[in-house]
Image 1 (tube, rainbow, N blue to C red):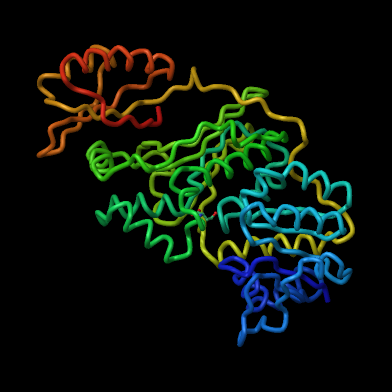
Image 2: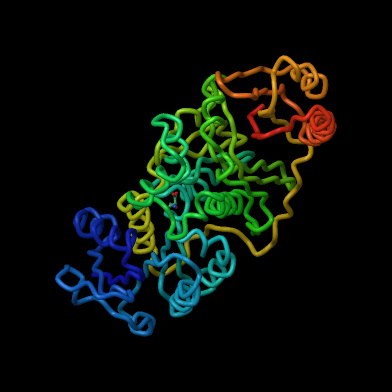
Length: 412
Ligand code: HSE
């Protein structure tokens, strides 16, 4: 028997308990022995439930119990998860977490402690929910050099964009539904402003590059500026709009960004809808691969946490090499990156389109009935060239009493 403790018995923590219970025999066979939850740490009691007798409110009980070998952190946030996880590792316990905020902010230090203490700090559930992307990067692609990772990494925003597009729901209605389904973060700002995607792409980039990535340096744009008209224009242009995190890795030159991206049908991410996540990974030997599945939700995420617990149970007496070093990765700006650009321009198409194409070059045009505006999609342009052209265009548009009302990056 191997004893475990679950810190935080919310959606994911209670899911971990359920997976361990429902798949008890399979987990025991894979782990080499039965896994028993000894403690559940939470501020609440859970009277009348299966964990009633396991609930504790004092962390030191876990820290000081040598019988507890596996600890699950599903509290979220940094405080007290960071000091608790650190103390568990220092006490020689293995830890698995679903908490990307913790991994992005303190992963380097926690991995170093795990290495030193000969234990494991694992975080498969922190990116892509139930999709096994972390293990894919550190194990399955160990012999490959990753050149690009582009992921739809946030289930809540993918769900919101899908519902706004297909059902015509408002942003607020879709967010409320995502919260009710247990997809959203406690503070949904982390989802809709792109902060959650930012931390996830930072973790994937650090794993691929083997160096620490400071998520605060990643240019991040969420979906709060996206409106129903943008999605309607995208439909007429045959494009889908997704919030993606992208990193391009060419030796020491690495650029990372988070932003909404318009993409065509030939992109494998085009058809990834609802709460699903998908991660496109390009390797110098593997070529292009894509990993698809449930990116949020109780049991998919809990399944990934339990997989970590099993790997830890299989490696109780040593550290499994994974993660990244303390050396910091210098992120590059994207000046030479090439995109197509989608712009909505206020005013009459007949009066303004020649002016727009004079500065931006030949464009695809989209018009929606009843709106005193039009949209254009440029050909592929270098980011710096687009910014210069846009500055000049905005000046002449202002003189004509018009303005740009939306700009969204499109894949080249
Ligand atoms: N709020 C996150 C999402 C949960 O919607 O993807 C999973 O990390």
